Image (cartoon, rainbow, N blue to C red; front, side):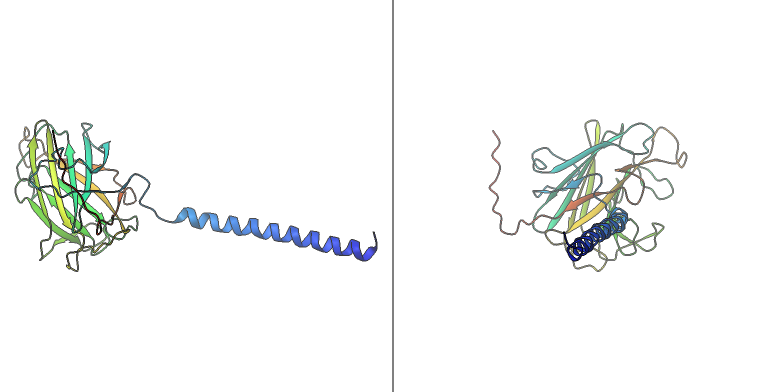
Length: 253
């Protein structure tokens, strides 16, 4: 082999080594960035089935048969309460059902907390964080029973919406407490989310359990969460497209 050919071979060999080295460096630079992205899908991503349940405080089996569901022992529960979240959707509304094996449905007033209460905090834009200003929060209790609000600071402070959108209800069913919520996909209220098919939103369930056997206002209620008590510990819901779907009624025998 002549010296010019040897020189050319060395040049291309070094060029190839440099290209490989640059690709490795680029991969190393990109990897930390990708891992640092906040995602709220680490627990469960719901794909709602089609349905329009009656919001009467009974997560009735036939009405919620098409629901996507997720069950866990409530995080932080002193007594190991287990909660199940059900998600349905039609063309206008998102529906949430929640069943928890609390030993009673308590009605009372603990400094404004009106008995056993379900609080649903939404991460409207699926950022992975709760309490962003303007995002939604709804509560269902045995007295009000429904409140539609929005966050006004990142510490979780809320104001009740002037326009109360949605509907919530609860009831004691056998050995369980049942909660149901209907909330519009796009109400037109500036403090409500407006979602289209393919959009994803996050949420966290917060359950306040008051023991009626202990005189109120003390002790404070037991508080537990689904899925967790950190801002990034959320479940998510992917809004489905049912605009062109035709659903035949179910026939029960």
